[in-house]
Length: 114
Length: 114
Image (cartoon, rainbow over all chains, first blue to last red):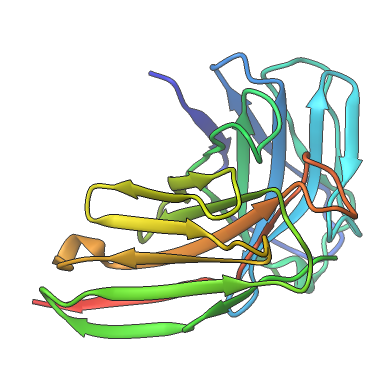
């Protein structure tokens, strides 16, 4: 089944404790992206990757890191999480540019930073 | 970053009614997209629009790409209970940016009363 998977689905952590949210897609997509969703703010792009080893900042990259060492994986890293990073996170992928190709979203990761 | 103004923020309607929502921007975009998010899931693409003035239907859904390229609307006819969810507009490929970034509206929460 073609899909985007994220792990974990739920995570409660404490301020400053490094964490990684994994994202994997099995559709051989070139483009992958991370979004955060907050009430009243909609979806905001954190980082995106156009291909392996090619990443770029989205609209809200502060406090996050990403890497794209393999085509299928695009982990999101929070080196020192803070409470303002409590949010619902979505990974997404598309064949190429998301404006011209359907973007498939993962099921989401709900992160709480205490 | 770029902003999309999506309205209304929420709608509460009776089953069978028609629904209309729209998105506007101060910037010109080359692509307008409409997504739906069901509770507890990631957004799913409903309709994609690639040409100014384009009118596209998907079942009971109809969307149009504004002639100025600064707006789009989505209509849902004869609503049913499973139409409940959050509807997002998204736009890409604006003149000041790239096709690799999508900007999302803040969403319209639709509730359908059976």
